[in-house]
Length: 409
Image (cartoon, rainbow, N blue to C red; front, side, top):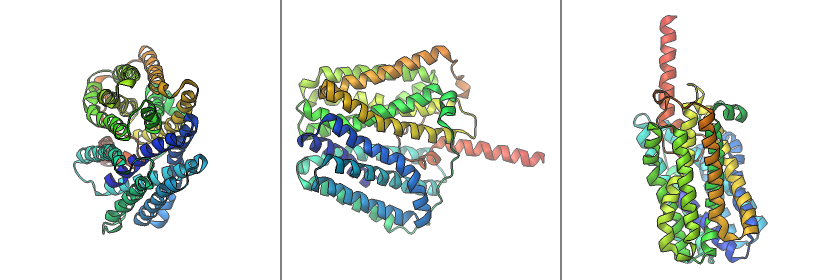
């Protein structure tokens, strides 16, 4: 997965830089990037039947090959509508690849679920960050950069294509209506939606913004990688605070802090990448924690047996937000100018902070004894829910309840 995600991380930044160089408008780039996350939503429905029908190895091989071809086509045909279609296909491929890898990991984990889950998340973020620097080799204007992405997708399929491990069964998770999810955890649901909007906009449009303020390709890579590094490093300390205090209060201050650093990013825009990268580390650490805090807040308010269904709903909300984010912020950047990007991020962060503060006054806090443990997490597929150590404790609780019922019978 690390090999695949280094290619996927490179492609996202590469497209932003190339689209700007080709003169695509901000709203057009937003549409192209939104298609990727819409592909996530479509793929979450299409890929499970495909995996069930033809198996994990064949699905993984087919989707990796498709992603490689799509990557090359981006560099061969420069057309915004065609790129939008390619991004849609790439989003479907990526969610399918996530499903295969994560269901396979779920099958293999018997002990130390928490450690394996943490390593998987760190590898994912680390690969996304490392992939940014590959753009330095050829630059955004050369087909060689797109060829490198295709090579990484081909290399990534080799370990699984050669495996002799038996194929797992996809997890079956009961769905929860989104309206019910909003009623149970107002802050969790809106937080998942808003975090998707904010992080989806950053993934899709940050390279466009960085190029517009005069950063070189290497500085753009460093800027985006710094944000990812911050997201990997700061989730644990933020989560530790949320385990001790009202999670909504921590979410409120994380939003305020992220908004402050987004505004600082705008103020320091003309100073170059040397100033922006440290700011990006803190911004990334705060903004990347929004989704994990929203999931933990929802877990706190869910009854046992429903948390998996609720988290699947949060994944969907996050995907909807990630689809809408590049569209909305891209349109606003088109009217206000590309340099308004950090200000727009700050506005949406402050809107989430305001709503969270309102809910703090409207609803009582979850007692400390009833809070679940915070787990750093990023959006992938529904299969990762089975790997979440909180799912293991839930399964144990259900088993204990079943045992007690059998004994009484």
